[in-house]
Length: 457
Image (cartoon, rainbow, N blue to C red; front, side):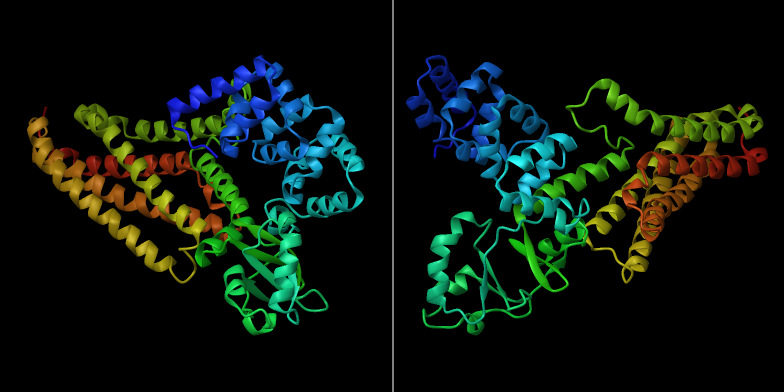
């Protein structure tokens, strides 16, 4: 398998494309299958439909299945529509069950039923079972292609089975030990199996304290467990019976999916991050957020209107409105990001909430003190007509605003999480707007109270 840098990849790609133009199957296969599977996908995505049609002729269904399962869903839908039906069925039949289920979940019901009817009965039943599990649960992302053994088996027998069954299994790094009722009772790593004596029984080398998840366990929780214990795979059970495993490659997809989802929530662009959707679709998904935020913005304008007399009496106060609003929004969003990440990775729980809130409040105090001192030094030089009192009003207002903003940014996602809602819906723009409003109220209230003491302009 060749490893290519960017320049050599472009040259190599041109060579492969030339074999398609020349219709030289032997040279194509020799060059194409020297590539890493990821580079094969990149090449497939870079050629024309006409060239892909030639590739389908030169690549066997079982070979194309390896490529197909690594494609994004949008590309899978496109390429499957280009394949002849028999070829497409062969490709699907050579894919792992969990990848088939993930693909079928994105298809119209009629198309899914058509493919299921053309699949081998046993494989179709496995896929149908996986499709029954709720989305974003361990059952929905698990695979049923694993190797289970009996505690009474010898190492020699298991090693013999591995030679036969390993090619069909998702992973062989862990072997799962089950009893006669198929209940999970232990796990053996491939390493332990290799170093054990051939005559040893599995129950002599297996670990009995097995960490597992249920089929209904949320996929984020599965990801946290695998990250915490550094697992390459975790067994999935239903009432104690082993029904599947979740592997690390599936969890990597989950982490990417959840990160994108949380980013979309925090930035109020949920559902419109995908670069493959049209401008109209993206605009339609973002519009409700923008309208809601627009009305919240009217509240901000109303706050400024309430203090119109203060502004008219001392117009220089207007110069610091952007400073107060931007600082409040930025600080709140930072605290939000810290808490959402902590909840996502499991580092924030009921036992650590108090400590986390105290830390965030302390952070707000420190930031506020630094900002206030800086402003009290800088403002008199930049705006000498306002004097030290103006600097003090701005500095103290910013200090109080930053303390308040960090607490809002930290507590809102905790409250939402307590209500069993994804904490990422505590979107940054909402917290920013809340902090803007409170920052302006603090600033103008303080300025109004001390208005008579400000030097005349």
